[in-house]
Image (cartoon, rainbow, N blue to C red; front, side, top):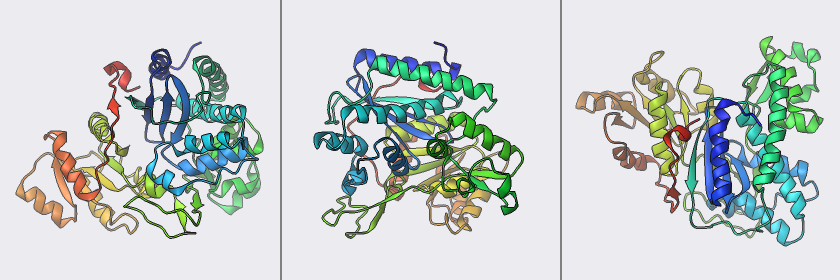
Length: 404
């Protein structure tokens, strides 16, 4: 079976996970997505998304586990556990609310979507984290083994061929189409309510029972004609049970309040704005090793929409970029209502008094000299967001396999 060139190192790494019965996870990211694929004793047990994680869970369970109440989620699980989805699935199995066949079919569908997105992307990077302490208490029959994963990949490759035959290229399927003008409503190929910014392309394909390539093809023509644009949708929210109390020190809610998952997934999210992909990669790996979530922006003007959508806990901002300098970006951020309270650390070439005085003048919170050791950045970050402790052991892949 032939795979896209950028896809091969990742698949080889996963095959090694199966062979060596590895437990842990792989983080995969680019400018459009962030995913974490979880393994336990050589089986894939789940994949979760950095963006709209709760929405993804609710939409998929409604589709593939329609008779099951998947919304009965303990809010402290979301706050404190990495993999609350698997915990909830296992609870459903133990109470015989859902069957093992249903759960594994559900997991397979989520993984198919994940690997199709990866197969149609060429710029993602990934990292394997080995976890020697088995934190997942669940049915040992839950998840996909090596043979089941290979069958899944055959399906993904076939979908990729159909995708390529339509000349679709790279298209973020987790975005939602939004009609630019009401005058164009009659020319839409699908029901107009799909073009109000409330349904992702994946969700449209699921609801319409259409192939994702067909939906993407219809939308791509509208994009070329400048009739629609693609936007991120908001994450879902859940209501707490009356008896539940959030135990996280950072977030406390009264009973019957609405809890949004983004409050936790974005709590430790750091944005890196730097035109150097090499430095972003180096800094990103350092921060991920410290268990922070990150996303990168290489072009600040075009990336401003993503910054507004994600609302990170901290921004690391390079001062020297070709299109616009970081000082100007900092001034713009401080004048933007929805972003002006986010701490900003300037990434500079020098750490001197004049640099610090100017940083203070434009209301940056701190500076960090890029020539310094990255370890010196940690206490600066911890001034503005908490440190995240982890007992996980980092397993470093060979350099040629570390980034795809």
